Image (cartoon, rainbow, N blue to C red; front, side):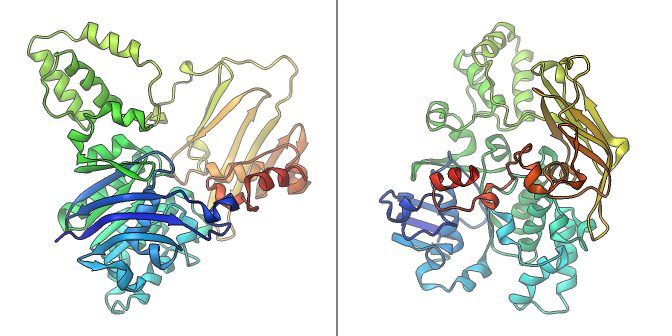
Length: 464
């Protein structure tokens, strides 16, 4: 008997409020979010779900977690079963005992003030014995690698750190199934691989069934055993990873980024250069395939050149910027990189763009430091400048201080020391409303800055 089973499931959202949709005209939208989807997942599987935006991935996750039909209203047909029981007949609390969920909007999932209390909340509500709670908290923090954040306030954490806290809170409950909706969307490449390594370990050593929705196809392909592809609310593909990746034309047609390493070997196979075995799903596998081909006496030079020429506009989604080389960038591009909480680890790689003589920077940070009320030092003596027409990139690991820098620039935070100048004006005595005339900001989570019901009203509001 499958642990999770959908049979002929269709779902349509109705009576949406402003938190569920940007456009109130969708309140009675006849479009189905899912259409006749049938899917079964066995105990112990590691399944990846991919698809373009709006394909129904989050709706599918909500069905698994019981949020549909117990939280989100809509028209549901077909059956959704967990361990043989229809979710319509199960209380949401009973479903939560079996399935742990990490949703896209991490802030909406947080309920406590600090990290330890966030993990404690679920344990107490599920009635875990008090004698067992400390060890569960310790274990969850250690597995995810955030033991040092135990006493931190949640509002001092970066988006990536909050993702890790949410995963730790779920791990502490020891669910049979983990459903994660883009768990690495706010994580750097190293942390993303760490999270997937954790999930792989939980799946392999503890038998936890893992279902992951992700946009990072290369990462999914390396860790999952099975790929489910959604498109326009329908199930387009459901195959083992190596077989799913052979459907290159289908994946491209529905807007899914294809792993570049797999693409390379697929091209070589199509030219009968490599043996037509399963496609590699990791960089290591790809290297081994190419080495074996070279050892067999075949030349790859002309084939690789033609591959590069035909795919020069490659997908940058998995580009590792930890070794940033600005020589490949636009002449007006520069990067500020490092750990902003440690001045010795901050550097600026300047572009070849040189400002006109006597031109003043439009943005200047001079020896800026910032500490949160809890005492956590987020920035220490950060200095850099940006000139009109430049494209400046802030890069750094999770928790390095990137978001704090942006909040200081737009006035949401005030520097503990140092000065910030915008168009030559010191912002220390300026109101946020005054700074807003010079600085526009797009948050990590756009939902946090949308305040109207429709797109038209939202755009018009910004002009007031």
